[in-house]
Image (cartoon, rainbow, N blue to C red; front, side):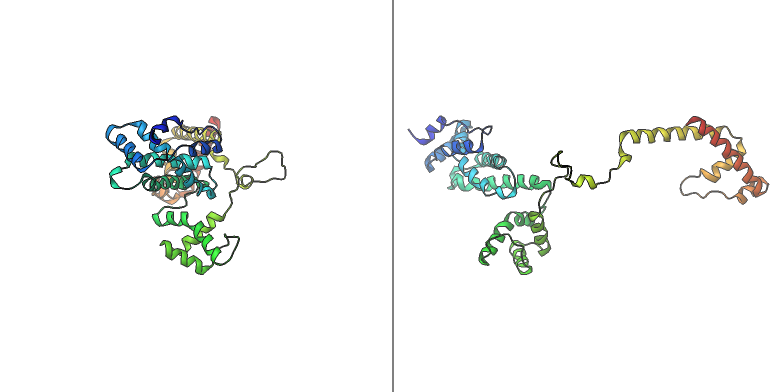
Amino acid sequence: MSQALTLAQFPVPSASGSIEAYISAANRVPMLTEEEEKNLARKFRDEGDLAAARGLVMSHLRLVIAVARGYLGYGLPHADLIQEGNIGLMKAVKRFDPERGVRLVSFALHWIKAEIHEYILKNWRLVKVATTKAQRKLFFNLRSMKSAIAHEANNEAGFASLSPAEVRSVASQLGVKPEEVVEMETRMGGADISLEPLSDDDEEHYAPIAYLAADHSVEPSIQLERKERDRLHDSGLRDALAGLDERSRTIVQRRWLVEDGEEAATLHELAAEYGVSAERIRQIEAKAMQKMKGVLAARM
């Protein structure tokens, strides 16, 4: 009996257990010969046979695990990296053409890496670190290039900061600006800091949240209070103006309630208009304002 037929004997490794158990189960799935791989691919392509697609995916789970292991340095869970890589593997199986003379392992490698790269960029420290194709290439090659540079310099640490000459060399090889290399190196070398205290028991522990000034003006209760005050002010102002005689109301409106872009009338302008002295206009205005204050105070 061929290995392709015996794949059905192997259940799909469960992600609900430990990662070690998953890897062990995936590694027990037999590899396919080239002929078996072509036969399964043709059955899936021509007949839509999902069991054939399952066989192709199962036999390449170990490839995803090996690829995902190379991205553990980004601080993301190995299981999550494998899961994203498996999505890439399934996409590769869906698009695989057995007649092109290329093995699935070579074809799937691109799709597996693409999904893992996308996942890392979206989730790595919750910071968008790369937007262009060149920056993405920088992000995923900087660690290995730094390690190679350190090895050539006999630096066992392997992660010392790049010198200006090394920065220029990396930038030239990857097609980015030297300042982008410096920025990416700084981001990748920085440590995450918890916004909240990690423990309630440590009275001496201070987290960044303690130094952030709280904006109480955005609290719902404050906003509702402000809206209600504005509403009362607007309706109260209308009532207060309505209680004035026409001349007093006009004087107050032209002195204090002009529209944006308009200039308030002066005492002398109003005095000339009404045929009285500027002092008389001031007295009328003061009396009207006092009356309005009394109306507004009664509403608040």
